[in-house]
Amino acid sequence: MRVSIVHPRDLGAAEIGRWRELQTATPAFDSPFLSPEFTVTVGSLRDHVRVAIMHDGPDMVGFLPFERHPLGIGQPVAAGLTDAQGMVYAKDLEFDPQQLLKDCGLAVLEFDHLVSTQPLLPARHTRHPSPIIDMRDGYEAYIETIKVTSGKTYRTTAYKSRKLQRDVGPLRHDYATTDPVALRTLLGWKTDQYRRTGRNDRFSKPWIVELVERLLATDTEHFAGTLDMVYVDGRPMAGHFGLRTATTLAGWFPAYDTAFAKYSPGLIHHLAMAEKAAGAGIQVIDMGRGEKEYKEKLKNGEYEVVEGRIARTSPGAGVHWMLRVPVRKARGTVLASPALRTTADKALKTFGRIRTSLQSS
Image 1 (cartoon, rainbow, N blue to C red):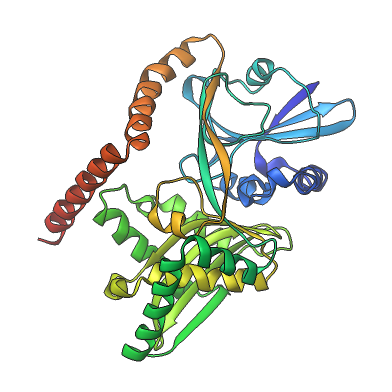
Image 2 (cartoon, rainbow, N blue to C red; image 1 turned 90 degrees about the vertical axis):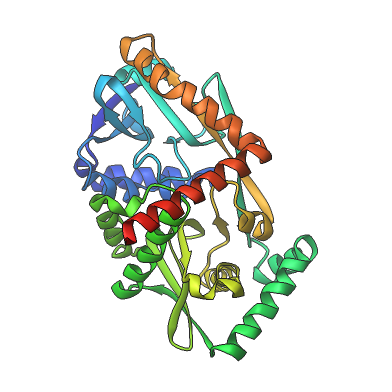
């Protein structure tokens, strides 16, 4: 086994073609976050992105995209933003993960959304569900399932949609739009949401805004940025920006205008998005890991992702352990307990209200 390390901009047509071939051959890799286009786009904005290409004789048999940080600390590409991480590789590939880390110049490689079937699976790890909307049997079959598993939610959402149209006006859904005004509106809602809930505003980082803009401008058979918006009486009400392969749409940045909060605009939008996506050939919407009420109400299946790290004995791995592992364990304890999770969420929202108040004063 031979490993070569390249920057994404140095990938040629042969490498990208082989990467895509390996990705489409294995259903577990059908996530746009594992597509070569995603890594190439992030790499155009982040110089520390690399791709390890694994060779078995003349054949390319695996691709591992990663970020290499000081002290040999490795992370997934666009760490903190991605809901599927890991390698894209040939079936039955065998290799030594420790040697791969050494070849990549890494002391440690951490994940929080590692595809669970990966040979990079750390010895110590935690597994987490990633809820999905499974429409492989069609949108109507999905709706029939939801009527059984979340019947009250489905009926209430349908009623609120009708009431919204009576109170305000007709609904219009623009699926897969490239309207930059719609994108700016959505990102503004998302920034407000981050601030209200006490979270860090991802869009305060210019490179993330530019990443989203570049991905929106990408549209191929195999990969695209997908923006859609629901309007009521011509006014934007709710929307989402995500990424797709030919058959999977990854949920990424959903948001809505809080002026319509009493009508459950997020649920109205997600059901409308699922119908439009199914009509465009999408079979699965991966809503991503996370304890969100709307995901529990809309899901009819789930994937599994892994959190953990693989490491070589080195000073960099020791520093990483001290800085990250105790914090991760504490966060995991909170997320595993509904009572602690609720308390933490309330504290973040209180912080968000105070921060918003101070910023507006």
